[in-house]
Image 1 (cartoon, rainbow, N blue to C red):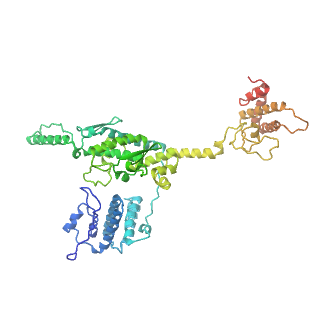
Image 2: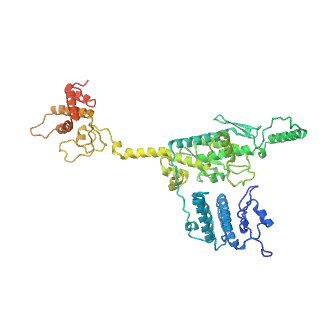
Image 3: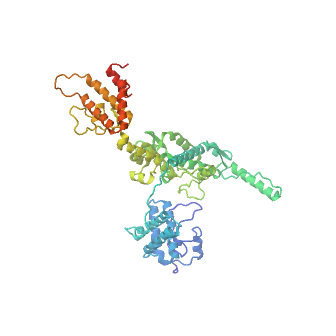
Length: 573
């Protein structure tokens, strides 16, 4: 390094970090081996000179990367996304050093393409990463290099890495039921935690006993280790007895300290549970919910719930979120608890952090640990949101309404959030064929036989014959969709129908000689033709016709026609 010359500041002071988090710095990328070194120890390696001198040919590139990432952060970009980008950049630089590829502003594009080829080899040959992981990693690095190089065409489009297709796994009926059962069990646990961690429980004696509706019991010691009551004669020394007295004194001081310094694990557990319940109710993503501020909330009645606004602008103000009516009492109870525990904190969901930055969303470590103890499946916020959206979609059957409630476009809802359901698909298929298949949508015909319920007259229908209308049985005889049934019962019903029409025709008196035929005569002729076909087709059907005529002769009529025939004959009771 030239005398008196100093490296530029490549840190990110705008990123708020926890007490134990390592500050972000791109300076190690200027040193050979710096990208592959441990992030927490690399600063010391740079100071002691163990990494040698800076590679000045990289300076323009690293400075440009720093400016681009800074611009994203200042512009409101996600801290988590940029942290992942930094990890991927370190991996890219480390590979380039091992493969002896140059890392300058002029050569970085070519080096990037070589790196994507190496990623593709790891996918296809080594098989230590998935295609999706390789593409995601390359996409992040391409995104930042495109800004540095002012490219209009993304670098990743020049590589051989293709975007993996999004394949949705079809869930069976059992998987659908299990998913909801796990979600309900998870929700019950969250509710029980909130109910048991009241203000008196937070500041009360330890341990706090949480009784769950499942029958399980949790003991929360809030960082206080349970007393060891085991006595060992061999280890009963004066030194150990003295240490035990000091330990008992320390434990007593911890138990009697009724402040957040010792009770924050309990408050964090409840706030984690409340935040997950809030996400499940509102459908808000974790980043938005975590950043919400405590306000003087005003509840405006809405269909099946409430729109929540700030009381200062309740008339024309922005709707902060929407909740179901059943959740309001629980939410108001949480607000009272939260104001009592954290009177000075402006966050809606205040967490006490030790090492993690307060601006970084919680990883729900307490809830995860609790689920592990109980043998329950942990449901992440993203999964809660997806479950809620799919439940709404199935209940409403309206993608437009569901997309509006979830604050998505319809395309996003259907491509990203909707999960295939075997049960729902079966229902949709059945409804489709029920409306489209003539064999399934048929109605009960008024005449013997079967049809699809759509009247359509045959060609060359007689002028005086009844027109098909699905109302008059005679009309079915000249309907294009009417079908005969090859059974003895059908032939019996057909013969009784013909007998009924003969009785009806016998009572008809034409008003004048030469009048047109009575419609019943057409029906008798049509029915006679049908019976004639059955008689002439084969010996079995001939027997059906003869049996039918014998039954009619004996007065044994088909159940579908017996009442009408008896009424015509004047024998109806």
